[in-house]
Every structure is written in structure tokens, then in C-alpha cells.
Amino acid sequence: MSSKHDLDTPALLLDLDRFERNLHKMAAHARQRRLGLRPHAKTHKCPDIARLQIQAGASGICTAKLSEAEVFAEHGLRGLLITTAVIGRHKIERAVRLAALAPDTLFVVDHEANARDLSAAAQAAGVILQVVIELCVGRRCGILPGAPALALAQAITRLPGLRFQGLQAYAGHASHTVGYAERRQVSAEALGQALETRRLLERSGLE
Image (tube, rainbow, N blue to C red; front, top):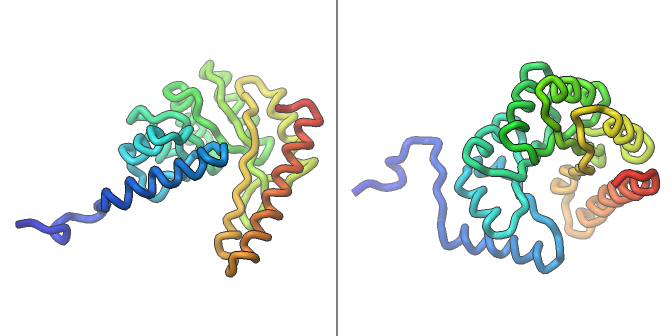
């Protein structure tokens, strides 16, 4: 009789009862609060799990890298959000091919030069890239909230081949804050910057 210790690594092992309980608990939590849910797939990297998450109510999944998104798209998954910027000619060429396969894929930008590179490649390929702006609300990458983000959004709307779709704001540093009350405060401060930027964009005529 074989056991799990005989499996070659890496191998993904699931306790199916716990997995299904967690899957439906998270989906129900978001649904009850009328929140959209787009889980991050960088932990499982598994198209079958991503498909189950979407079937449970997720609008799509997040990936950390272009290469992960390519795998999910090839397995028929849609609603992809690549949470880091795609930079450099070779990766941008791959991004354009991905957009042709999965047109609703969301690409993150935080600098106008990158947006211009994406625009040129999209034009050349005859595709539209769906773009979201990453805000710097913590100790990560992104453009500063407020006026700098507005200027970038306005630039994106003028670039052919790009369609502005919103904002990404990730307060990763909050997860390292010790204590519930302290973590809640850090999260609220980050969210506040994102919400104020959203309001600024809307007042300027950008949805």
C-alpha cells in the first residue's frame, strides 16, 4: 500500500472536507456582505482549485505573475488579474498574446512609461488591454494615491489600446501588524487612501 510519503515533490495534497468547507465559507462571507471576491491563486497555483473557486461565486482569480496567468488562461479560466506590472518587451509581447486569448484579463500599471509600452504593443496586435492602476498604500510598489494616480488614469484614457478599469490597493504590510486593533487601524488607513483616490477620479469624470 502506498502512502502520501511516496509521492514525489512538489505535490499538492488536500483535505477535501476542510477545503470544501473553507471554499464555501469564504464565498458565503463575501456574498452576505455584497463584496466581489477574486481569490489569489499564488498559493495553490492549480486550475482545478481556481475553477471551483469561481463556481462557488468568485468573479475570477488573482495571479502574482504573468506566467501563472498564462497557465490558468490555457486551462480556460477567465477573470484573471495579474497583480504585478508586466514590464519589458518580451513580457509585454506575452501579455498581448494572453489578452487575445483571455480579453478580460486585468493588467496592473503604476507608471506612464509602462502604460505607453503596453499601448504600443496592444495597438500593433490589434487588441485592447484592460488596465488597473496600482496604488502605493503600504510598503510595496505603486503610484502615490491622490493627484499622481489621477494623472496616470487620465494618461491611460488617452492611450489607444488601453481601457482603464479601476484601482488596485494592496496593504500587505497590514498582515504583519501584531494585534487585531492595530491591524484594523493600519488596514483602515490604507483603505481610506484608496477610497479617497476613487472619489477623486469619479469627481474628475472617470468611472
